[in-house]
Image 1 (tube, one colour):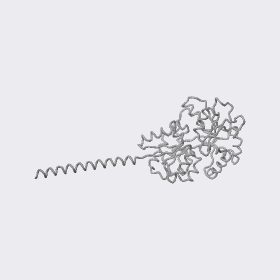
Image 2 (tube, helix red, strand yellow):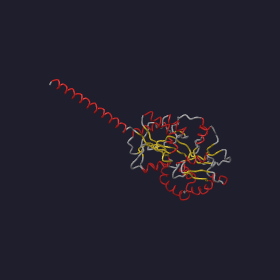
Image 3 (cartoon, helix red, strand yellow):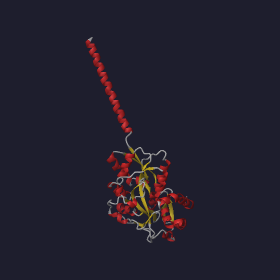
Image 4 (tube, one colour):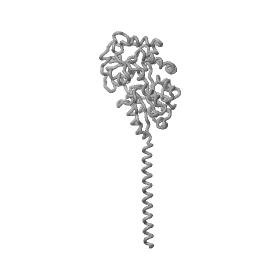
Length: 350
């Protein structure tokens, strides 16, 4: 009897230990699954050239992921204006945590839509005060440049010196521009013409129209046509020749500094209102301003880095910082940009 009782006790003990072990293992598995399901993923929206395989985005994100162990999903719905439109559509149910590429010309509309949360990065002191275009710190500048008409030296010799020169008959069907409804450069060029011609900007566009070969949806497609020799002029940036010098070892392409000045373009990044990943979003903003990221931006975005101490290669000697930097006050853009673009569409939109 005693031996049977002892045997039963032994069986019960083994059964109990087995059950506890299984329960513990099951708990571990559930915890592992839970950790996997809640692993941090940061969603970043940007414009297409930033997210392309040759853009700055993939390199910066790879370094960020290695540094913090935070997975990043990069989405590029189009050019800067399209990105903003997407964020506005989603603002009641935001899908992104960070946006990269909303510029100084889109500031007023961005603030009016209330799609961002303010963040004053500790790296802000590294950025020149003249580049800090948003006092509320909803958008933080990460690079800048100037819109410029770029040209192909092998296909044009007599160069225009001003916006007005572009209207000359000799430049018929020679210029590629971008749509201000869908493209940041397109909107920038429209504002450039308004900053020079004021209320007479449509009359200028009337004179310019014969010179325009085509108006593309975004910068990438427009610049692609230019490098395919579809036209000798294209709207781009004062820094665009740097790419060709640095990566193609050619000085074939140049950028024009105009007598009346060139319109300044400052790109910013911000944190999406309502994000559940605020801490990770702040880390990403800070990381974009590190020395490594700023060098990557300079050499992939082909723009001047916002952190002025960033060391640049000799190829940047083929770019220029405009002697006359043109800008329209953001409050004026907020009040009138919709009407400006609408009038442009009525006259020149497809």
